[in-house]
Length: 447
Image 1 (cartoon, rainbow, N blue to C red):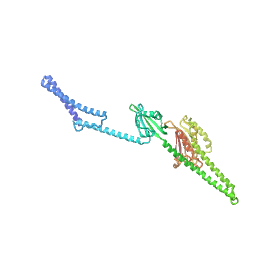
Image 2: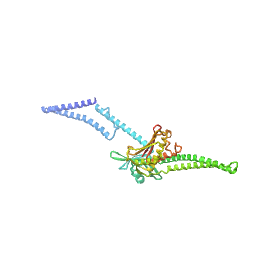
Image 3: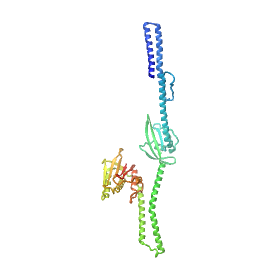
């Protein structure tokens, strides 16, 4: 309806101008002075009002576009004055301004919300311009961790802490890296990751820094507590009977010394007691050696090894152990030329331990089978799976089997799986477990 009124008003003015021009042409043809002057004046007036009619709409639109250009969305266009079509145009302008203001307010609220979250997290974050070094944003956690005042350009850090600047801003990392930073009063262990992103023509770098010193100290403290608890328990279990038996033997000897006739010395009992003490002492020595085997694996001798060669070596080693057992051991690889960088001695130890555990798990299984397979994931990393069709691992102990000295076997030391996990951690990999009482167990080594 509004557009119809606009078209009608425009058409009326065009027709009036056309009539004025026709009259002017008629006055020229008839050589009528009064008609010529009147129609000329009327034509000029009609052109002027047509111009004003058109230019007013363009001026209104120019005003609106100018306010958009300078982001002045607070401007209000009158909806109660002027022609109906201009009032409707103003109403549309105001609706656009309201929408843009609402979007800006929402974005501002999201920005403040995100900023508050980033301020609250215990992770240092800084973003800066790669060309100028101007800091785009940083949070208090980074300043507190590095013991720095607020700064607007990373050149501030370069002048006062060159070594810190090199580690934090001048080094590019492709993955999360653990770094020891030398601060004024201490050495700080942190995790650093960074990324570069582009905003229009400017390049920015985002650096994320996490202080792991307290976490490492807490984890180390917890590990020591668990280790001391296990060691104390095991040592007490060995020492208590030794102490009790030694006290009993000592009483027998003292009684015999005081009254040989009333308390004769039984050499068989004495020999049996000493033998028991010796046996328990040997058990304690075995426990100490077992603990030492856990603590001595601290570094790797890496070499490039073909999976087929690794499997052949393990197959040869296991041949004697499987000679008198009805267990079928199979090795499979999807690519005969597959190779990876490992400490072959330690990985052999891991796989042999897993195979031995699988042999024990299939003792009561019909047609026991163990399958060792090697594949590559989508990232090209090698995965080795040791699968058996044995009795599986009870769900209630699955979380405990990697704990040092935890074992469900009567003759087990509880070290094999914990040592395997330590070896995989040294390889920057991990060991995963899936087990089902009906289908068996799968250990996956991910490198």
